[in-house]
Length: 289
Image (tube, rainbow, N blue to C red; front, top):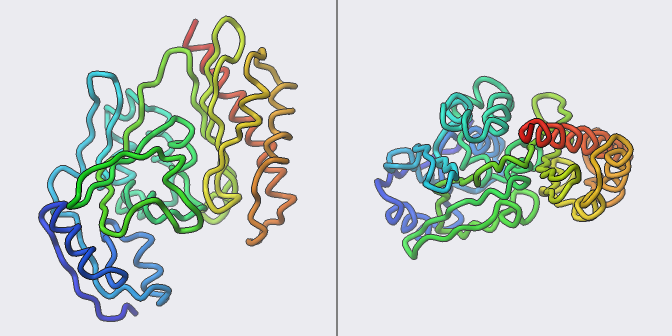
């Protein structure tokens, strides 16, 4: 059972921001509630006021700007994102991911903004969004700012969002013709145990750039810079990607908790980094042909 709560329904970002500032730790932003209501039912939070932002205009919109960047409103549900024609056209990799998150109930009610702000490590979107160099927009009564997804996460259930800020959108940059994107995961009980997001650019037969992130094995998405350095300038191939997977497994910051051992999680990292790099490189080559 939920403890008694008071619900506020602001009509603007500035009003929502003022309420968050007024009530501090007693209040939380409420959108889909798929994660928040669980911790409230378990009495794992002292929140007794919900700032329901669903009546604020413009937070569900999805559009593409003149530069080809795709912006998704923070209140768009996972199902809406997966089915939206613009997402399917400009970010098919993200549409596919949003279509397999958790279960039907979560996809129907859960929002992309809520997912990112809750910062549960065993979730899907963050790893891929970091790999494609996506950004989030945060607003308050004081103004607006953008921050990269890969620096937004600070740790377990902890982000760079300030107490009075609302996440308003997520922006994915244009997918260039030399780049392939892959998302790979291993999951149990609707939660990923290990995730990998890879963006690989291939030109003149060699890898000229990449972004590789792993998630769910530690408190936040981790960039595999040693992998990116190792494959740069190399011809894509099985041996190269096997070596890259082993390199990532050794570099990864592994959470010792959970049913899976640290050794097993490292094995998963090695396997799925290899799979993601191979898939992304093949996509990049196919897009060039």
